[in-house]
Length: 328
Image (cartoon, rainbow, N blue to C red; front, side, top):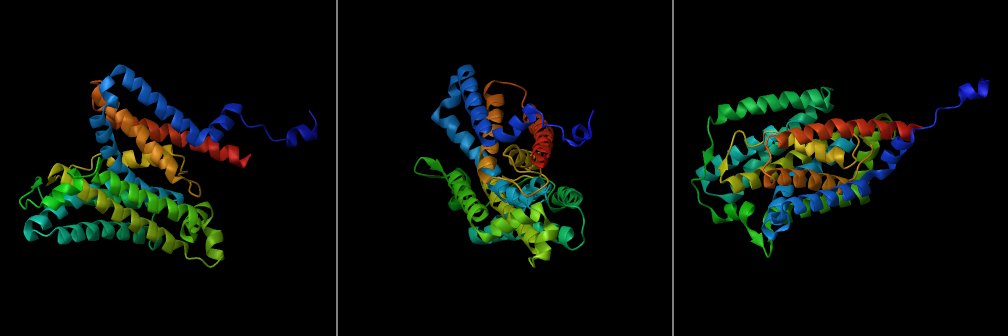
């Protein structure tokens, strides 16, 4: 063995390189295979009513996942979104019942959710607490706090037609939640892809130290991403509350897992600095088609909780392979 042989780096595994290059085309292929397979097993899958149901389910996840993508790209994460989603619904319904005002109910929901995002961001950027630990703590406080706020579901006593339409209404053939999700996704995608803000968020995730040395306040960018994610949780919480016609303390169970699974399945790196909102959209569609297939095929619905967990482990491992491949 020569000195040159020792110095020569090991070539990357071929399958790892293939994983690295597959990305969104692979997700599109997986989505297509899933749709065909479920349609063959259950023809009602591709009915218009079921397609609308899938899109409605995707809307809630996509709204929050759009903000979470920006946050994860900046190398942070928020595990409190599920607990916040449930609390937002209870707050919104309580204010709506008390005031009979959709504007005040919406303002209360957004203020509460944005405040949670702000607190998370300040804990991470000012106290220097790891975002994983910080948002687990916030999640636990919210899960307990919602039961202090209300021991049971906050039922609808206001009967506001406009609020009911927020979750169950249509504009033409499309549900209103789908249109809201499309608008949120479009704004986030343009901001990430074509604005200075999006580029800075990516740079912060890739190398926060270099961004600070260039004179940009990396902490402010991360704080902004936390607040945006919180506000989008408020939007999703309002829609979910409208769909259920009540504020449920348990409404956000497992929601954070689905959101994070969709984001990393779409190719956004948990290490930060790399991600795509179109990939996140594909990740949401794949997960929700699987969920819908489980229901239509009559399988145990607890599998809906199992799938995101498996996806998170598998895709994180593949992300490690991608990162090693980039390094080589």
